[in-house]
Image (tube, rainbow, N blue to C red; front, side, top):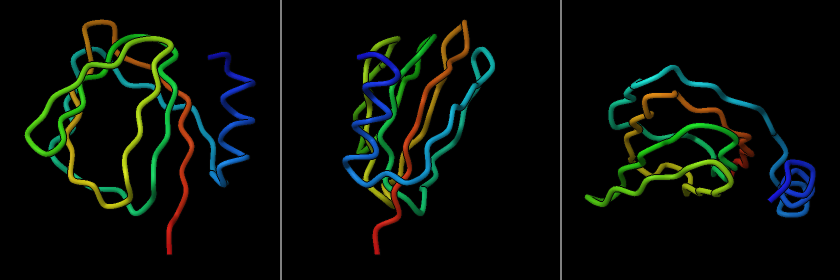
Length: 91
């Protein structure tokens, strides 16, 4: 999916905060949660996302989602990672 189309999709789905995040090579984020729902498009690199005992790897062009308050951990690949992310706070 192209960046512009993804941004339009985020707006249509009610994601009111959109930003680009960049992570260094081999960076690890221990288990944590977010006070918002996440929908993101990988732009570069690789992310291994662990939720509920399952791991999934995302690469450029793939979309990942996380519900608000979902415990998860993140491991970034040898090239680091860059993604466009929408955030939506659910009451």
